Length: 424
Image (cartoon, rainbow, N blue to C red; front, side, top):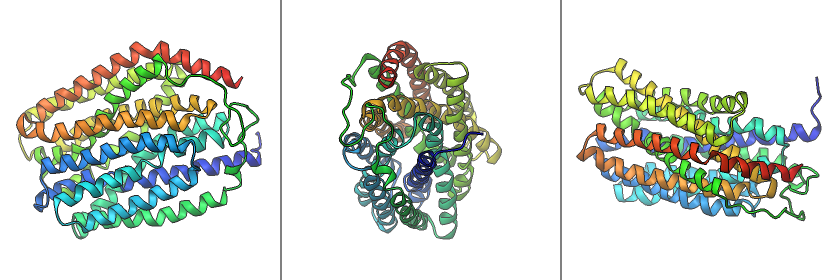
């Protein structure tokens, strides 16, 4: 059995610290969707205002991804990760204290920008201060932090809703972020010397004082990738915001019961990232072909779910709610798998030229711009046309995503091969 070097041990400690940080931030950003039914029932907001609040978060998150992606290749990741978690925790506490719907919008928007300070710096840290083998192995686990954080969020919110309502849920989430941020700060501080050293002897590495190979970032393949991420964002986050509301209106009126049922979503989502990785490796596919397969799975799951949502009478009970939630979870898992390829595997190639943070920030900004538009449209469209029409739109988005990814896979493969050749 091969012994790990001291560098590899510290590299894995860095990966685990990044996993903790990225898992934690989802505790403070998924809670609006869980709390929204209770906020609507309490009369402090309605579906239209709730949609605008979610849209504001995603707009600020999208803009933040673009800005922080650029900054992530220039400012040390440790500073951005710790600051982002701390500020997101404060915003959650302010949400719990807010009294009117017009206050929710700017606070949750600020929370979106704060949450955007993590992913790009994390990807830079993993691509810079680990080995190629470690970064590829860790890629799916980093994406799996999303459903794990969501599970924790749903459980904390369920407890908060049971104990004192939606305000208590936000307070508990905010407090959890602040406590875990302190732990992340200490863990990263212990790795400060490791994160100040060159990662490998390769001239392609991104560290102070090293030269970067000259190669263009923009390419035809990246344009197809951006198209795929637009539809991925609509489905992964635009749909995700409204699932608790769909369950409340169609199946179970109790917010706390809906919150518990929603824990099914991230449990199944976890397998999406690993399924995409295994499909990618076992069949030796390129990233965009793998995404195309994931989109097609989403089309199937959403189509079956739409039939049950259309034909099921209101308040039809827990069994049907669980069944539909599983179908929506399968769609979400496939979208998380596609997201792993689009926002982790592809940007890691650009880490060879010191642009992993910039590329993932740019792509992520497109993802959440689409999610922002989706959230606003869904809130209004569900009132006017009903959930059947909304799900027809999501099915179309999944089919379009499959077409774009499969159409552009050869161009993206040419670029990733070029980037990988820089290292050899």
